[in-house]
Amino acid sequence: MAMLNVTHDFLEIADGEVVTITPASVDIEDAEGNKVERAPFHVDTDASAAEKGAYEFYMLKEIDEQPAVMRTLEQKYFDEAGNILIDQDLRDAINAADRLYIVAAGTSYHAGLVGKELFEKIAGVPTEVHVASEFAYNMPLLSAKPFFIFLTQSGETADSREVLVNVNKLGYPSLTITNVPNSTLSREASYTLLLHAGPEIAVASTKAYTGQIAVEAILAKAMGQDKDLEVAKNFDLTGELTKVANGMQALVDEKGQVEKLAADVLGTTRNAFYIGRGIDYDVALEAALKLKEVSYVQTEGFASGELKHGTIALIEKGTPVIAIITDPKTAAHTRSNVQEVVARGANVISIAAEGLATDKDQIVLPEVHPLLTPLVSVVSGQLLAYYTSKQRGYDVDKPRNLAKSVTVE
Ligand code: M6R
Image (tube, rainbow, N blue to C red; front, side, top):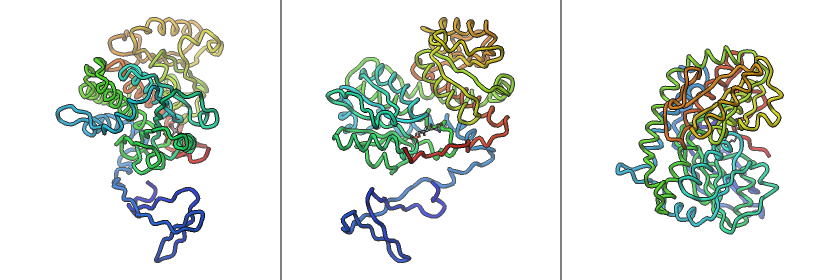
């Protein structure tokens, strides 16, 4: 990305190689001094897609782009007859596995948590999700036929790559789901699926998270269909992604409401909590990461039911608690957890799906398929994080101590 204003042609260098550059030539040698012949590759990405336009910060631009990313993914991964455009090779390889191992870091790890729900419920395959930096040096006991999925916006995260290098040594098949074609993790995995989200510049990842979840859903449906599973065949994913895109649009169109909530509830706080159950807990983790990384508010995501096992001791008058409620099975339980924190003085924002909402909920989410609710509920969390950071006068796109691509372990 950093070089697209200078060139669109790049030459890959592998580990251990030595390159001699003169004004007239580029020579590559391997560690033994043998000459390496390698053709450059071309990057099509339009540099203007990385411009901020009228936006003050990339993060808001990228939040606003999410409905378009959903529509692009529909076009890229479905033909007009509704067939899924994922190579049969990949589908066969992944369906031959007895267990999926999703490996990722940060926001991509959180997208993996939602992926587990999708792969288990739509494709019927047991799925584990691992933090890359932990997995790299403490590999769990693997199943007989593992298949690895690397989720990475940049495709360059060193922690994830370390795992992929080991996976390749062990000879296991792998897929990288990434936003960056030709990135290291894309080149080194057996298969790649792209997010087609356009360049993501803000350090805080937003559209890559929702893109990753949508691609996981498409892959899960393809896998389930190939296995003739009713749940997959009946999942009208193009229709559902259109609903998601419209729902996201409605949320970003009403961002002024979230801006006010951020000022009222998160304005000067030093800490905050996100709570939820099941898939809402997955989003609570991601929304908490967003808030902490751009606004420096110490924020934790908790499974609502865990509060009473210790964390509720931290709730005092004015502590912000943000509850995500989209699952009818657990809504009543989470609401009772909300009552418990209100009784201790918490300042609550509740984010509820339309069908479960009451007039006390501050944010009402448009109805979407129960497995796709993270795609809309996270938008509110992203906007709360954005406005809290902006209202505090921070550089939203470049939070302190963080880099966009984390290329060290
Ligand atoms: O490029 P990757 O998706 O592999 O990056 C992983 C994390 O470093 C990244 O998601 C990080 O957590 C973001 N800053 C979160 O907004």
